Length: 96
Image: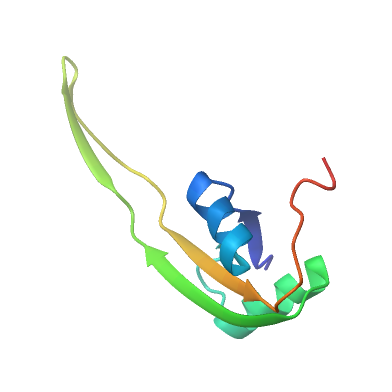
């Protein structure tokens, strides 16, 4: 099981990382805070102080078309906000 799926790179997340040393990640829905902390420390070589997680359920939608009713949903996902120690940074753009 790969714990970290991808970093969240939005305006809000980037501002939070510059001001408060907090970084966002999409993580596996079965991962707990300890596993997330160990994965971030191993992948980026920083010391993690705090991990906060949020579970998002699927968003369901219904469309009425000529061929009938079409139901759909997005995937459920889990977000983790990781706070690293003061003075340490994670550079997402270094390996592009």
